[in-house]
Image 1 (cartoon, rainbow, N blue to C red):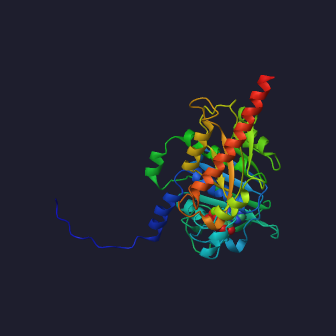
Image 2: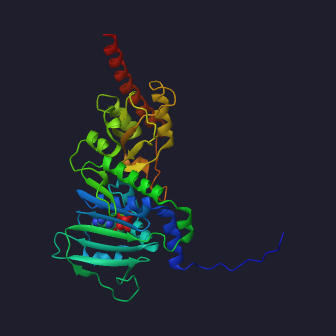
Length: 367
Ligand code: ADP
Ligand code: MG
């Protein structure tokens, strides 16, 4: 063993701290896209356009028709822990927006070049601003004193352009080589939101290509949104799932804080060979929930051929007081109370729905 004497402890420079933190929140281009998509939804948009170049590494652009950002707020837009969405820690108990940490745009600005054009309804003009490392910069992304956002022509809403993602994190660029793979992750996230958020139309394209990778319009039915994103094979074989008042919902609500479940699952005519992972939203947040996924698979194993997997979409509403949304940097996981009872209730819901379809099918073939 070599003898080691202690080295002095020093504070890291803020820019280093921020770049390290950014790397945890924005692991891959799809994380940046998800954060921006959520911001656009939080801003009350009814239409969102997404444009991607080279798997999102070269360019990610998202344009919305939401509330826009006041000119006075632009200096704080990419500052870490600056948010318009909460003011106290307790606000997390009743949160109805996706954002709350004020970290996303800050993080993105530490590992890419960000430019923004935004216009609120009351402003006569739009404003354009450029950011790196959390701060407003000049159009060439140089730090300078007194860089003011410039007036420009523009529609109501916000357009955010992220260029050269991870340009200053070479190790990340090396480990995330495949543009194709990153593109499909982005399209997957956009598609999941397009299915879940009925009040918004979402289009997603590759730069320079005319056709849409995802395309939904505001007001489409859930079935049509699933058709638009996941195709006819799935949309034609859906069983509706709904936990309604005449189930034992009152007890589930008062005892376990399960306010409601809606969704769909495919019947035994469809086998999810591509293994599209279940689409779970808990209190409108896209999450992965392994225990729920496993429970659903063991219910459907009763009805489906061996090794077959269904396609599932579930929107679960829990008492926000029982839900911790702040356990993961990318918010991909959440934790909630009474997990076992809630998963049991959902399994039962799926079992009932699938067995009634199964019965009616048998009945039909018998006749
Ligand atoms: P958070 O969403 O946690 O507040 P962000 O870094 O994602 O943090 O965004 C910071 C702030 O910028 C938001 O609170 C919001 O006020 C504003 N903002 C970001 N994107 C948009 C947008 N598309 N439209 C309107 N305001 C936005
Ligand atoms: Mg946000």
